[in-house]
Length: 156
Image (cartoon, rainbow, N blue to C red; front, side, top):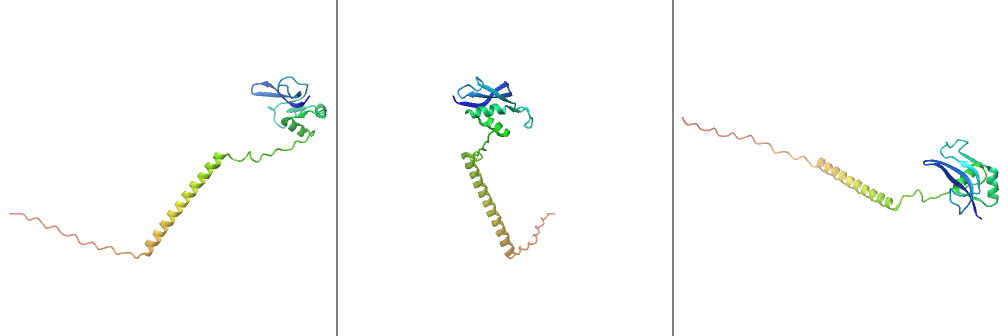
C-alpha cells in the first residue's frame, strides 16, 4: 500500500484550515486517512508558532515505513529539519510567451524606424540651414516709388 503525507482541507469557504494526514494515495483528499499527524493554518502570520504543528516522531515513523510527503508538506518538514527539500528551478517560467515576443519585436522595429526618420529629418534640416547660411544673401530689389494716380479733371 503506497502512502502519502498530505494536507486534508477543512474549514469554511475562504477560511481554510488543513490537517496534515497520512493517507493511502487512492483515498480522496478530504476523505479517509490513516492518521492525523499535524495541522496547518494558512490564515495565521508566517512567524506564528501555531501556523504549522506537526508531530515530528510520527512523521519520522511514517517516512521510515515508506510514506512520501507532498511538496507542501515537504516544505514544512524541511523547516523542521526532518527532510531536505531541493529548490525547484524552472528557467522558462519567467520567459514571455510567443505573442509577446513578436509584439515587442514589432514595437522595437517601429521605434527604430521612427528614430531613423527623426534623424533623417534633423539631418536634412541641418543641411538646409548650412546651405542657407553659406549662400550669399541676394539683394532684395528696391521698391519702386508708388506712381501717383492722375488727378481727375473736374469740369467747370
